[in-house]
Image 1 (cartoon, rainbow, N blue to C red):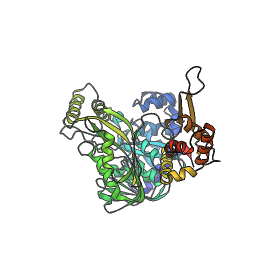
Image 2 (image 1 turned 30 degrees about the vertical axis):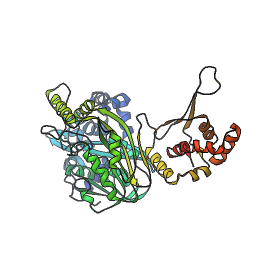
Image 3 (image 1 turned 90 degrees about the vertical axis):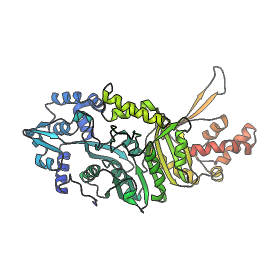
Image 4 (image 1 turned 30 degrees about the horizontal axis):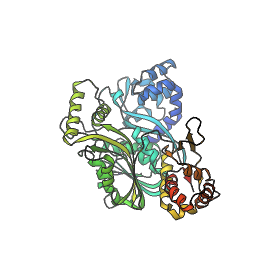
Length: 501
């Protein structure tokens, strides 16, 4: 594995190989931990409460080696030296200390890192990894430090779920953090370059790649696109430090989430810079926040940043200025109803007020070289599975969609599409017809009688033109008018994956 600025945490691949052996032999995996402490304790851990898991472990005598590893690295609780020694039969406690995983303090071993199993399934099949990161608020018993390196969180899993899963030559992971996106990207790329402004983040990312036997990632230190000046990639992925934080003294600036620029300028910089680092046909995917003001809609701002590019932006939620401030102050570990919280709250609201910000949007951004795709939409409901496949299918659909192609196309309704009809009591004809999607973005699209009839006849046997001709004859209406009416909706249904070529 190629690296720039060799990580301080690594004392050689031999030690990491021994750690890998110990984790494997202990069965340190997602399913095993779930079975060890149960569904309720797992749910409590997700809420930041570890007492139920500790009680569950105590009820089974500590849970053996698996329980010891879980106590140290998932719960963040020290264990006795003798117990820790048994958990690392090959690496040994000294080896674990040498890797920066633990500190030996007399007869006690204290965790220095969070290390937990992580599993998922992508287009290549099921995968199980281990991911190291800095100890969180619960383990520390205090607010996290500004240089904290975050593990796999909600934003991480969101972006990895959005990522395209088709093979490419090269991928840039901008702001890699613990390395999770670079590792996902490496499953579909010959080469990955992962950058970060944090030396510690790169150290932990390199540890995670080595621990999981991934050797195609090159780690580079630097801000935004500086480490890859003059280089282009087939794909760019980024979960950038997009949180909008007041740039005033006394407000912590966490490296993993705060980009150091005013407002949403960092997300704008990432978006505007993508065009200079994408190969022809390349795709950039990122998460971001954008500001709303009384005068400007947030999505209009993003549209301005993406001028000259294909852009598909999906806004998933918006928060007013006060709620946004509360969310991210709590995220840093500062408790509400304390003087510290109130001071930060005031600083956030002062900043938003001074710049006229009324709210903040969050969403997904997909960019390409310009071919005419410009979609800016709000989808705030639950979504279906495998968004990465859905996005790839939609991009491919956009590239062949023309009225001439559609009229000749033989389409089929996707297997996850259902039709919902509503009637006034006693009426024979429906008052509302909705087409509903189970996967993708789980869209609901209203359909008139004519469109519903066309979609209902899409079984792959007849072209759209032939179907419209038959329906026009049946309904005794003009075929050309029917075709003109339904083609825009058919185009949309194909793009969103409800009708398939």
